[in-house]
Every structure is written in C-alpha cells, then in structure tokens.
Image (cartoon, rainbow, N blue to C red):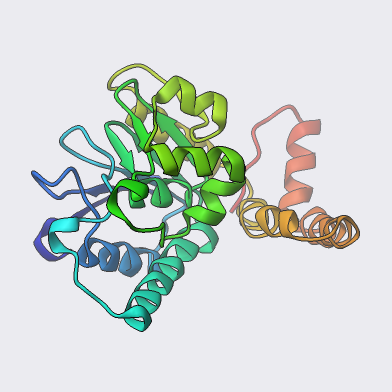
Length: 256
C-alpha cells in the first residue's frame, strides 16, 4: 500500500490483519486511507477467510481528517459521501467476516467504519463519539443508518447534539461493541475470533453476512421467506452434510 498507510499481514491460516497507519494523525480518515481499504476489500488476497481491522499508536480511527478536508459544493459533497457509503458497504457485504480491534479514538468516521464490521472488540481506552454537531456538519459515511440502528434515533440525536463520549463498558451496554476487554487484549481476541469464524462453513458465513442485516429492512413476511431461502441454500449444501456427520461422529468438521 502507498506509504504503508494500511499495513496488511496475511497469516498462513488465512487471517488478514489490516492496520491503519497514519502516524501522528490518530489514524484519521483520509481519501488515501479510504482508497487503500477499498483496494483491499475489492480484491482481497487469495486464501483470506477473515479479516481483523485495527489501528496503531493507541488509536483505532479518529474520523475525517479535518486538516485535509477539501471544500466541496453540494454535489461534490454528496458524491464524496456516496463514495464512503460504497466502501463501507464493500466491507459489510464483501463476504469476508471482519473483526474490529479497537482502542483510543473511535470517533465520527472511525465509528462509521467500525459499525460496518461484523464483530467489534474494545479496550478500556476506547472512546466512541459523534462530534459532528460541534463541527457544523452531519454524518456522511453511513452512521445515520449503521449507528442509528444500534442506538436508535433518540439516543443518536442526543449523542450528536451533545458530542457525548462513551467508553468501552458503556459501548458494550449500548451495542457499539460486542466485547470489552483489558488493555492490550483486543488484537489477540480479534485474531482468535477470526480463526474460529474462519473454521465455519464458508457458505454459512457468507449467507449470514449477506442476509441478516437485509432481513432487518424487510417486512416480517418477506424476512421469514428470505430466511427460508437461506435455510434451503445452506442446509442442502455439502458443508451441511459434513457438519452433521462431524456432530454424529463427535469430531470437528472439516469445511473446504
């Protein structure tokens, strides 16, 4: 990646660890970093089964780099926002399970990025914040949908109006993170969970990622019908046969 702005390490067992690496910038989101994320998720290395996303120098991502903010007209701003949406969608729906190992700043666009991932782990230093009200702007990278669905509109409005900060334990109770761990423990747990998830049947992982958040958008009847289609697809696959045989034979399944 250009200037090592996104460090990529792929282990022998197919776990890709992506480290956002903007030294001295609290890993603030620039177009260059967004483009690096887009490039990875558009064409991940062969053999990657799961991804861990983390930061460096004590921070996950502090959001939009205001020092590099480019003044745009309304159309340009809309197109830039839609570009963010496309990249976040690629992370959420690209088919690879993505785990965030978070610490320090998870602010603004950093929270938008984190909530596009599927599993989130927070250390005690983690700060969740949407400070757009103090900047005279509005979220543009998907928070109104992804964070809003986690918090609900009422709490998100309060969070944005006041610039309120939540720590790891509060974030756990609200759903902004799934795990609250000790200092220095997020990356280790993220990689452990990534390996466990990578051992699942690939088709099941893919269908869970693609279907569940979309079912949330559907009516009850449409959601239940879609669930049946997903069940039919997965439960008649060779992976399902292997999973059942492994259970009956009291062994770990071997999905290929």
